[in-house]
Image (cartoon, rainbow, N blue to C red; front, side, top):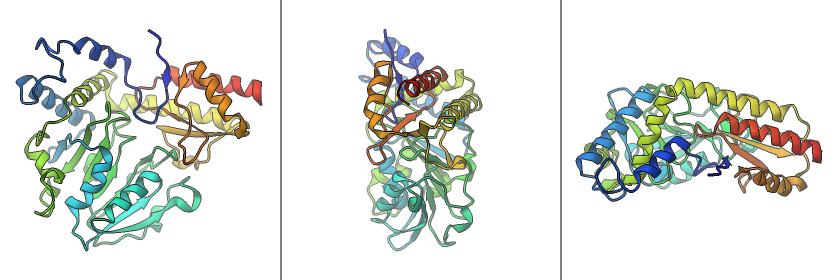
Length: 359
């Protein structure tokens, strides 16, 4: 079997060990004579899987007991609507910090349901920095404060948790499980699966129990966090296969030593890739050094006429999905948990050779 090094921003690489387990389980999962895609979500076997997945993610993230762990469908995009629907009323203010495309999308979605205010915006410098917290135009009366800790497109990341006197809501789709976090600082954390959790189709939501009753009575049942909390995320038929893969990934993370171990690896991967970029006149990264992402590393060639050649030759070397987002161009290496240090080393070696022959 020939595997490439996959630097996709999402759907992203999965651990090979997990893929091997999936391959073995597909025809006959746990002796049921069925795949997990065929078995009832109400069966004892699947209920056990769901409980194990919740227990493992609680352990990995040290989630306090007074928080609910939910696994709804719809991805982070649906949570961009569920946050204002569950936490705010039509005329109530909610505060948004925009440091990239996903934060901007969340704000636009919230405007449909509440008085969403932009209290800081990094668009003035093309989303290459985090606005100083002291400059944020906060409101003490806001229903919540929303931010995006890591922006996949711009490669911008907060290396701190904002202070907030109102519930803090975070879209952690591209940074969840990459390192330990203090969940108790947040009201709500949500994350699409297709970066560090598993395949697209399921979402991880962590919500403080004291926020579960804030939703108005007239919003759809499936758009309330309480409906998932009360049904163990089985309000309707869940995406059983995606849940199964997430369970396998959580187990894999525990075998790696948990999130402290993953943080050490992820920081090391990011540092060596940024060091290679910074040491070269041929490549550059536009993001301020104090806001660079561990997970998504954009870089630009000094001569953009070489972009196509770079992508063609890197793909031929087994380095795939390095094209930057269409809105910013250039290159982008997404180096999530499942992207090995070996993969990053191979990319750095290719970049050096490409510079030598084309610089």
